[in-house]
Image (cartoon, rainbow, N blue to C red):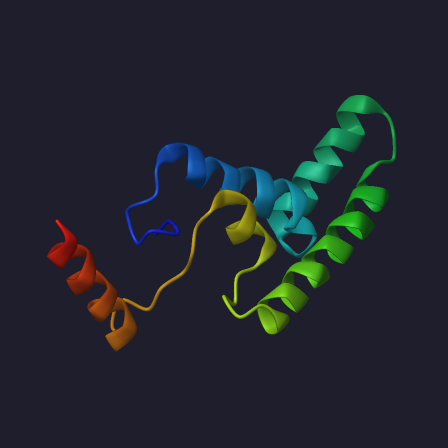
Length: 103
């Protein structure tokens, strides 16, 4: 969902899933580490270790944001203007009802 409880668009998904999670915060994911190693092989430079360390710091920061922000958003949700919702929750159902009433 985006910040307005509407369906996300392709641009938001690419920013959230590919750029932010896979490339920026991805040091904790196996597929991102494999991508980092591929970049090492293709470029001949050992950037994977730096990329992993920076990515780990950003991932930790993202986790801290979830804890301290009232919205409970992580960095990838902030940048892509998305949010994770529990579709079974009463808050979500109430928000959908209020959106329908506004239409």
